Amino acid sequence: MKDNCRLEDIAEILRQKNRFLVLSHFRPDGDAIGSALALGLALKELGKDVTIWNEDGLPERFQFLPESHLISQPPDAPQRFEVVLIVDTAVQSRVGTRCLSAAAREGIWINLDHHVSNDRLGDLVYIDVQSPASGQIVFDLIERGALPLTSAMAHALYAAISTDTGSFQYPSTTARTYEIAAALVKAGVQVGWINQRIYERNPLRRLELLRALLNVLRFDSGNRLASFALTLETARSLQTIPDDTEGLIDTIRSLDEVVVAAFFEEMPEQVVRVSLRSKDPGVDVCAVCAEFGGGGHILAAGARIRGDLAEVQERVLRAIQTRLESLPPAP
Image: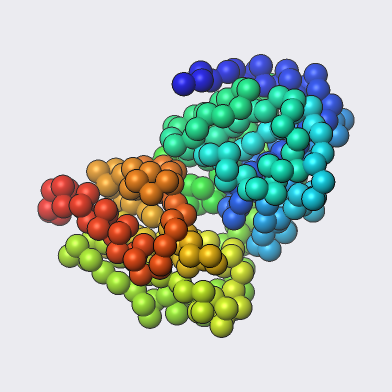
């Protein structure tokens, strides 16, 4: 296994080289977008030539972030870069085929991430599985490397850390996380403004989607396992976009008796996207997803599985039920 390099060594490369590409995973969440944007903006402050790509582009709900227009989808023709930085991406394939094809495989590749299932690909890696968000790692890189921190960067990092910690609620949140949040506020983050835009501005179709999912809500293992599934037909009838599903699993995860929540999304070409959330480290959903070629964190993980929606749902639920059976009964 490749050992971590020092963040100071990465910062030195950022100062030495001139042409950079920043990548994050497809179907990007707030951590992917915020981390990539903040890193790109830090490089621009150093006077570098910076490109930021995402396979699916910039999600609608993060367009409010300052300078977010810098994030684009990759072109068809390959381009050359001196350094490629991949952030918040457990395995390189999750960058996406178009991004990987457009990024000529040369120069230095740097891997910054916090997923326990990270494959550690790259010339330099820095993986901190104790960090609650890749945004926290990017902040540490900026701080230790004495890189500039602007208000736009601070807003991007706040969005990254807040969304990946459940608005600072998840167990992975530490005193250091709050210290960083305080530093970001000092750097210009308007907490009320940004929280309202992250958490309180949803399109009506998202509510319609949640209603449709609750109509097919299922409970297993004595109500300790809750799941719902989204068919292609329902998604098309509601005219949803991929980002509309983000965070809906937390609605059923929040139920008192539920230990594990599961969301199954039917995709084209007989593929099912699976998202799992656990409240108990005794049910390691990263290990469950690893059985199906996925990964993530102990309490939050995902996978893409080939097969029929109903068949995949049954297979994954059985794997979760097996682990739930080993838990001691609730007091």
